[in-house]
Length: 155
Image (cartoon, rainbow, N blue to C red; front, side, top):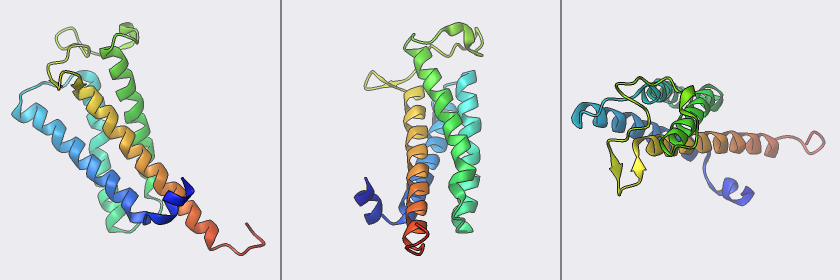
């Protein structure tokens, strides 16, 4: 893992998170606006956690903010938690009585499944997982670079 972090430039992690955020935002808009699939309550919560990441990462990249992961990680981690719960609901593992979904549009009904098993909640989980992993790797790379520049007696 350390060898991998040494070889990859620090910008790659933020740019990969940025690309996944844009894919998630554009994908969610495509499903709701072009495919006319209404989002359930948990999908709306996940959108509310994904959409601000566009602005946060855009400004962070533009300003070259080295602490961008601290602003974005809370959104991606919370999104990952909601997406995990949403998938557990879809797979009938989590109890449905904790859910905030309506009777008219339940969170367990899936109107779209790519290849028969890749659902919208699964895509959301994958997106939030990749964003969180990229931001954590960015944080680790920044910490590693700091340690390389410290004098030997302080390490």
